[in-house]
Image (cartoon, rainbow, N blue to C red; front, side, top):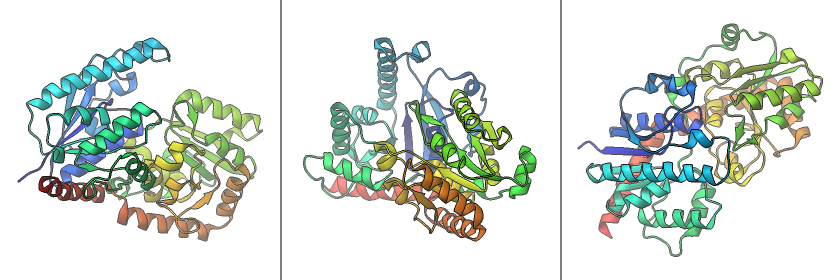
Length: 408
């Protein structure tokens, strides 16, 4: 019997943000594992760049082995994109409410074996008319508000399976519960990589020739969004550190453009060579491995925040590992769940410019260490952190939890 699997996402698909890549690659992996998968995404206004995408599967580099359906909603968000007042909140709630109402109407007349979502409100609504064992929740953070925590606690109690992306998130969700649940609905599932994306990587020389980057430079690279909720993700700290290491270039791949301009200005004010600031902008997902191959060293200098320290499972970390490049990253609990210092990465105190500079200098001068870290990280990601392995583990856990819930 084929498992019918609905992935419910109140998200723009495609999107320039990492969650779109995560969602679509997971849908592909669930389908590869034998499920009949439909992705129900909101029909929302998109950016001009994303609206120009004619083929979402090609854009994300995934097989067309799942169906994409659009859920209509009233989306006024573009009208208030730069505002944070009452009207912005109203537009947000209108979009979410109308999406949810139409999704519920469709779900009432749709049979599925699994209703899977990252959105607790969607699952709460479905829990009133769908069997508990059919509902699966993938949380990516712990809500900071009382109302949000109540919502997450209620959903964890009402669904059959819960798939947090870090151990700390699992612990905190368990702590929210007023009483323990029977059995164990939880399985920690870190993010990962699509193995095929990294199957035929070009050499560093080939990648740099294609990109027009200097063949002999030592390039420290950062891949991904440069800000989260208008907050620097550590790139400013990385630039300050590189100013202390002579002759090192920065490879910056991601957006938004205005953040990159600020970083270029920081680079200039530190009297660093403008030719060593290699900015590529936002690139198509299919070209990410090419840029990673051009780096000598991959950096993930996240600051210490509750989200980054405890709840982040960034795709960039796993893609750095799959690209077989040495990694230097902030020593955060969430990162240390995946890589180990001096074994599969160098971990430095978050925000410590001197320590980050010392780590970059050490890796530049020690090619054997770079190779050692890169090889260990590659073996680790290919053995434990692929979307295929993740999908199989999730489906197996859902099957086990279904039997336990039915037995209650």
